[in-house]
Length: 55
Image: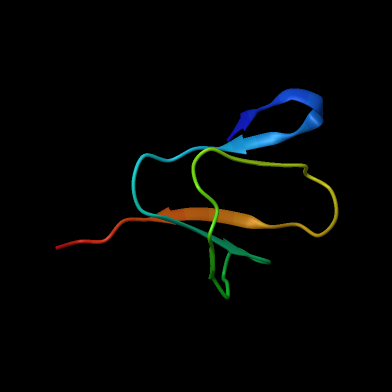
């Protein structure tokens, strides 16, 4: 993640889907955001990861 303006953070990815969870162990759910995803780090803690389909 990269810092963005105004105390926000930005997550970027080149392919695949963004997932988020309240803990590192999950449960992981889809976040339908597109890259770059900018958010303010306030409120409940969240974990992010990206997945890419394998063929």
